[in-house]
Image (cartoon, rainbow, N blue to C red; front, side, top):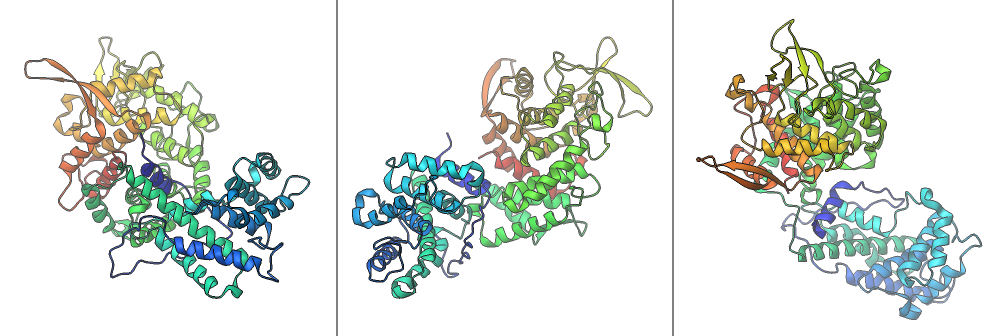
Length: 598
């Protein structure tokens, strides 16, 4: 089960920063002379108590600028916000606190309009939240009516108390904690307490909300830590890799042969973001943010990134931007989605369902489709918000099943070019082992010649995991026979030593091609499908079989740690094909894989 801290930290790294009409305070840096450490307990408790006390005393004073004596705010909105903050503070104020909250609560009820609203949209939403927070279920009918008046659509951008807590959690870093995020509000509260005549009740309400949001966020972190199940950790191997990778960038941009690269910047930023936001320093986050800003600026008018392999480049850029979760990148993701959909080989491009490439996506517009590019595209499309049941993903299933050696679903049969011999055609057909090839009739792992002379494109590891990942992205359940068959191939061919499935006649080197890509898609696929342990069989020297259950996350972590260079990078030193002779790419692949191994 996922622990509370895992949920909190995942929330920090995946939810977008919700915009609010109130400007977010500048994050103060902790003192340079002190090692940053999070304070436990109810932070800013004294400041919260003091501000509430000032709000109360001034509300009862003669001539106070409040609707009625004892009302804590100067309007419905500010009064409701103060009540919400009080209810969520460490004192847990509620209706039973009598004169402390009763005048404000009575004022809210008296402000209710005939249509059930409490004035404008924001005031109505805050009032509804305040009634629930202070009085529980006592005003259920009034709350339901108020929320119905506003409606779901008009409430979508409402930044309530829980969203403010999320904002606090989303700003946490390795050197920035809730006490730092509360500091500006604490300073403002101290000013109000020292000079009550300067009190601005609307601003004071926001100040109180910020302090209590930080207080609640900190207490949730306390509760999670107390569970002693810290699910999100960054291992020493990941620390070394992060340090090595960070040294390769300049303001978040990665270059190849001295030239800034969209593809490597996208992959580099994706890899750097595998470090949870809560564990990044302000400097590390600044570099990532600069890189994402540069990457977003590289998008063309047609929605693509890069110019050589537009599908691949765009998919990598989408992965990096989507991982950050900032809504500022939403327009970029939507433009990219339209571009990626335009690359799919469908009727609009003259393809018919019977065509081999129907439903696929290749390196770019009008390119032959393949399983690798298709799996990248499906992942990017889902990251841009396209649902699994969309027409594009359902049509992609036609291509996906034709890459799988599974006769019950694969209807492909026909002539295909021999990749090793010019002007030679192979008579291709489907196998039945459940694994997958590069595209229908083509495999980088070789071929199996059938007795009738037809050839089967061999299934191999990286493409079988790419298929498994793609099936899941397209909405197939774990018990779907196509998924079951692919998982069975994984069980029968489980290994981390090589990229399995290659024809032995191709030589030892062939089985190492695409090894780090293999590790990445393996981790992504098994994590998406929900497989925690791989059941496989081991043979001893005497040929006796032993059933094993492999914790693939633990096994993959151990494998990558053994292969890591002293400087923290990785490289495929046994087969440099597909750019795996470049430490930058292999290190990115490894870090993306390790993110799934927590």
